[in-house]
Length: 288
Image 1: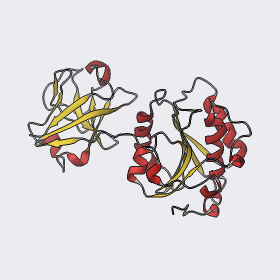
Image 2: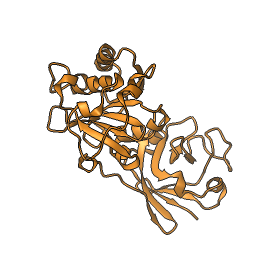
Image 3: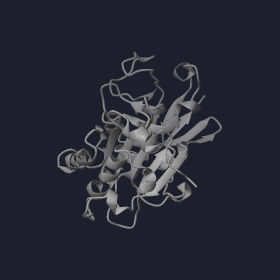
Image 4: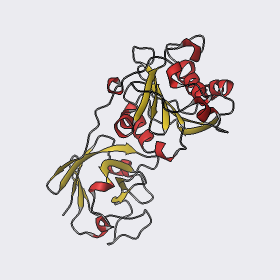
């Protein structure tokens, strides 16, 4: 049986329990503000942090990766309120999870796939107890009516067991996550993320690359973009580093992103636009 191993006193004794918000709501409407208002009524002492509200609409996979790139940098006990919910109002379950040192509240639609893969799952519960919802639950804005109240009550010290029955972790929904495939000297992979600047992040972790700085100095390493018939050979430790050979201003290069994955960038430019590449594009890295 999975149990919530924390105690209410541990969470409620914190001066300002942290609730981090990740949504696809954007910032032009009232949705984010309403979430914060609901939380403030229930847990006025909570510290609210906007992780991002710029997940592309209904893009569960991007929300999953944004969470993956972020959650480890937050304090122990942080509650992540994550709403990317194209199935809102349907039969998908609202859930709360205690995983590793953190809590995650949101829809059971694969958004937490990487959390489930990487962290020890102490407890997972359905959000079925009406005491921890708003009185009327909309079929279109359950972030307000289900998820925000649950996150707020967690911040106020309520145990996970109070929200509903425990769920076995293996019953939770998971996305199919493409892993890089090593074939000889080739790593077959794909683009998984485009950041605000148009830099492209692959699913090749730094752990698969030559260590001790050799990735940047070893000759013959190149990245193939088969759909674009493009080969990228330049590598840089940081964006403003002078290239090893003279390079056009719009010529792409490889780097290790702050997420610790292999990235593609153009100095002072938008690599995604220049290369015409989007998330899901296949790539092949050849290690000479």
